[in-house]
Length: 239
Image (cartoon, rainbow, N blue to C red):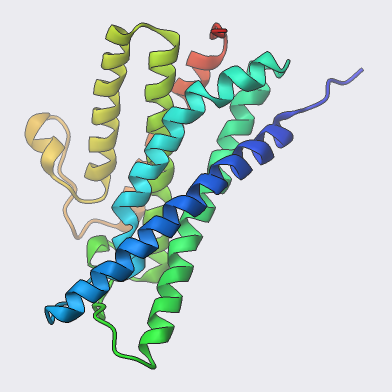
């Protein structure tokens, strides 16, 4: 008799729960952006478009979601009789879906913002992709945004699992690993800071092919997923 695969249900439930959080998050972020535009308008200044404006905040939001997933979803689903394997794959798929949503929502708000700007004057920079200097257009910028926020979620999940499975002291070690992972993530997209600390890591010049950065980012994501799977495979569940 074949065992029933429960990870699709886990994926749906975890996605829907976290998507509810994202609605609140983007509501407050949109309000902050509108207030920022009013302030900029009064001072004859310009603000970034919403897509760029939300990039760092969205990454931090995903980091927090990943941490919460370790403490909330893992114990809840396993206590309900779900295998650790189904829990793991369900949460990963749910996180992937959340990443799509967190990428599409600011893009949609940004599009609405620019549509409105065709009818009324708005203090929004015409070039709203300055944060993605290493990319060549909207399609590439969306891909960078997607990979970045997904990486932050996985890093947050790794931190949470480290604290959940081990004591706080070892958990601090996972925070250190997270800093390295996020530094590598920034390095792949053109930040040279890590290469000045670790000499054997080469500096990728700004002119380097976008493909190399994508490959590096995907490899980092794969390492994070594998590491998380190994840590959760036989993880004891705390009541």
